[in-house]
Image (cartoon, rainbow, N blue to C red; front, side, top):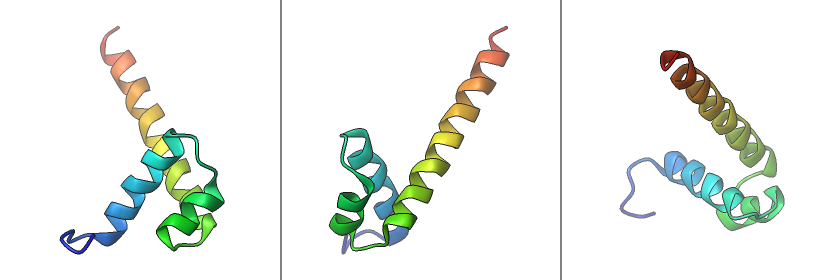
Length: 62
């Protein structure tokens, strides 16, 4: 993370990766040294973004 310019972006990406691997929110928060609510919010935002993108893609193919 020392070479990463955007630490929050790195943490968000790492949180999403860990959640996709099946880790619980609190474990991810401990791993990243952040509050578990931050992890929860990042994951929810990611889910909304992915679902919105998937819906747009499906509509464009109709």
